[in-house]
Amino acid sequence: MEFSTPLIPGRLVRRWNRFLSEVELEDGSGIVRAHCPNPGSMMGLKEAGLRVWLEPNDDPKKKLKYGWRLVEFGNGHWSGIDTAVPNRVVKEALLARAIAPLAAYDEVNPEVKYGTNSRVDFRLAGPGLPDAYVEVKNVHLRRDGDWAEFPDSVTARGAKHLGELIEVAATGGRAVMLYLIQRTDCARLKMAGDLDPVYSDAFEAAAEAGVDMLAYGTRIDTSGVLLGERMPVFRADGREFK
Image (cartoon, rainbow, N blue to C red):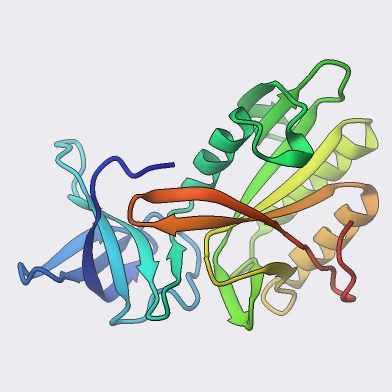
């Protein structure tokens, strides 16, 4: 997934709320307001002074002329903050058959109704294969070493999705939870049970019920966000999900 417009750098002044931030541009032109496309807690990604990258736009329908896209850390690593990006990255990868465990599927259908008043991110179909229902989650929390963690705040919706995937698995479909890690400084994934124990318990129940747990990293720079390498997923007792 490539950005449509070249990004410009700045320093984060503050994140006003879930959808609004202020950034001081590095070219000296002053402070601008930028759309923050992330309703989560953004733990560790919203501190004043962080170097961030904005995507400008000239769309007359948009009130804000900048969108916050990336955080650049001082050690050469990056994080994407746009929660809409993972679905775009995964869709491109599915169409290119770049996700090995799902590469046999040749039909990719986004936003298909299933469960209770829900839409699955992707339903995949292929000759002689059970339909695969794939939910995608954005991950960008890192607190310890090279561990990525999910979620960064309570997500009742996320737990609901796990319950619906359990139902898919129980009726003979293939159920897949795919965590896309929008950070370049992580190498493995675990659940943040202290931040949302209900979701952590739902994850364990889904793992026991046969839901596939996949995690992939990303390659990030100012040109875009691409699918990276597959990463191991660990359960609460320290076992790697297989």
